Image (cartoon, rainbow, N blue to C red):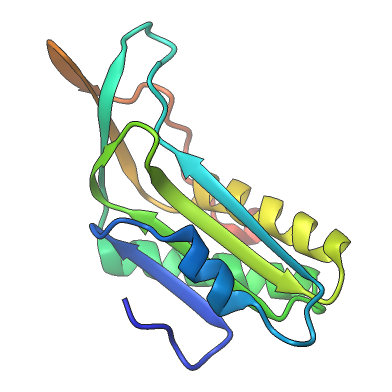
Length: 154
């Protein structure tokens, strides 16, 4: 994926995510803090199955638009933030691979940490993505879904 010329990089894609490349893109001379959050596929669920992989589905254009709303809301709350990248996988994601990466760069760590936490929490609660859990002898859509909220409600 080619980095944008802007200070926001939003993507929903079946391609593997590269947290290092996103952090390198977000690193700017005026930023003393670059916070990277990786949400990795884990091997267990609340139902007790040992997961082999997760499989995400989304309307890519809708999901990217909603993530754009998340970055705009983060900028409203933390105007000091310089660069924000949020990438989410669709399709199969193996255990230990990142399903979502959030990177926030700002002059100081407080704003970077706060904005990064807001971004991942907002993505989880406002972006329409569906997760299917796959184990050795079966699969099911995740039962841990929450109602999708509007970004303005956060």
